Image: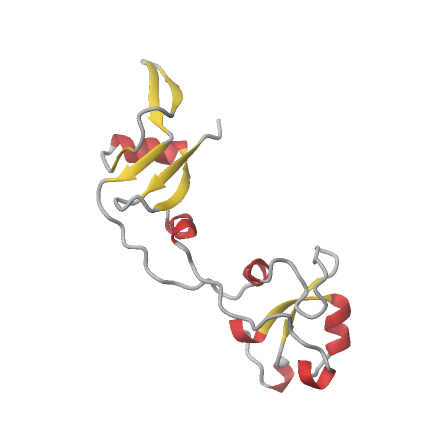
Length: 157
């Protein structure tokens, strides 16, 4: 049974979609209340059927702090939407690489503003040069990938 329940803050801001088991725990411990009276998930128990609301609201406000993701491979591809930032081709597991705009051999760091998703062909073409030296333009300026309230809960919950 893979039922999903929407979790909302007191301000009715959607925080995340959680597994029904986590929702039951929050409901039984009194941390949430039903947001709607018409949508339920029927859960069979030894004493009958428990009707779990599909949308629950926290009883206390949860502050969602501002945070950034780390610039790991998965997050760089997520930020760049699996697209080469030089030629705009779609990337897959056979041609996806990470390019350091200022190469590491020349003092470039592995930081958000210095790494982009890149295809193997463009990475080889650029080599140990900057984009301007290689006469290759970036599609967009790299920026940090930031937490949103929707994906924050999955990282702490």
